[in-house]
Length: 114
Image (tube, rainbow, N blue to C red):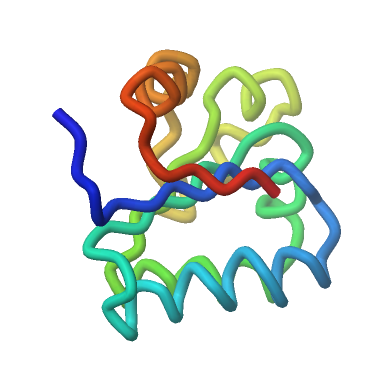
């Protein structure tokens, strides 16, 4: 079942400026200002490593979570890059993302890919 007022941001770009000035700026404001009822950020690819190492990004994730943004990470990527435990210690959901992403695409939901 789809929700029309739901946004998913697929975050794969590990550029810190892009992360701060697009992914989190928009993601946090989208939830804070009620532009979307639900906002999810999927951490995928190189971004799992960035999250595991960068305190600024970790802080932005915490801010996003406090605003009600759902933040989840790709388990396959985290396992392959050896950062699963770090992400779990940051209290992130770490799951295999292929089925959820496939369903988002099949349901024609709103998806931004960065």
